[in-house]
Image (cartoon, rainbow, N blue to C red; front, top):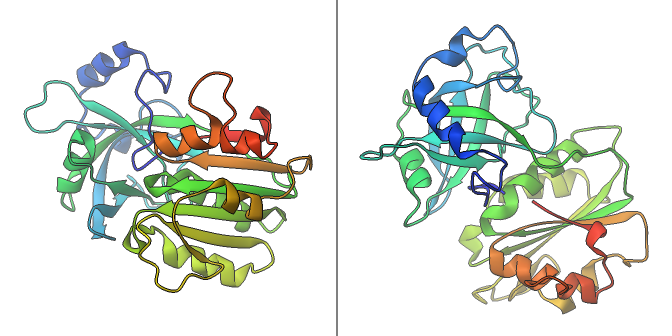
Length: 292
């Protein structure tokens, strides 16, 4: 998951020794500017990328654009991938590693955009929020989260909680930007307040462009929506809501993609081994659900 992706270096398959390797290599260098490949994340360490722009999108989240060494350089990323960053906060002896899922189109050359939520005790997010245009952030390598196959399913359901929207948004882009992919989607996006709805303009644009293929439902847990509608609901992501929105689990042409805070994921898939959670109660098997 990103913003940041809820994944420790151990969970991401990153040995502890990598931290030392990155430090020894010199995190803030111009390494990437000497790479022969035109794909920034095509192999080896990507290196230091300069911050081009930084935009506040709400009270705790910024959209940051990092430029590539050459304007024609490609990301080299496929759907769905995150990128491992290494921050060196002031006073820290070792770097802080965090994966983030780019929200810019991975097929666009020249840059990547990260959507970074600042957490009160978040060393990496606090450091990244402090960056100014011209500053550099070290990017290590890509992390493949899921390999999407166009038209593998007739319909998929995407369930996001707060900052967990980024990998699902990247998947949505990959599907809707591909004319050959006819997959239909329903996005259920749970947030605390209406101000916490990230990428809202992008989702509404997609919904207007693909009304028969993309549907979105926002759930606001603060109950701050005065006039609820089919698109806006008060409360959390509940069994009743998903029963209304999800296609029958007996259909082989459906899958659920999930990314959110631990409490939300535990409620949907079960906290302990053997528990099925809400999705299991609705008849969805483990192989019909993918958690980023």
